[in-house]
Figure (tube, rainbow, N blue to C red):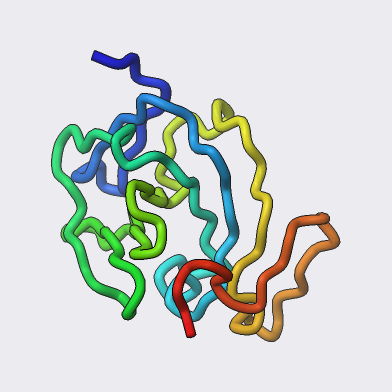
Length: 141
C-alpha cells in the first residue's frame, strides 16, 4: 500500500480522497464553465496520475461537461472536485481548493488556459505563466 501524501475533501466532507503522490502541475482555467462552477475569475486545478487518487468516502458524481471533459462534483454541497480530459488518459485534475494541506503542494501554477474566455473585469497578473487562448491540447475546438 502506498503512503498517503495528501488528503482532500469537498466543502461538506461527503467526498474525501487521498493522493499517494504530489500533483505534477497546477494550472488556472479561465473557461466559462470553470468560472461558473468556482464562482470566481478562474479555477485552479492540480494534475495527478489518476492511479494516485483514492476516493475514501464517496466518489464524486460525474457529469459530462463538454465534448472533451468529464467533471466530478459533490451531490450534497455542489463542490467542484475533479475533471478528466479525454485527451489526457490516465490523468485526473483535482480542484486545488479541495486539498487539505495545500502548503505541501510543491508546484506553483504554471499556466493560464482559456484566456480568451476570461472575465473581462479580471486582469491577468504578470506572473510569467504560459498563457493559452484555449485549452491547448485539451481538445476544445
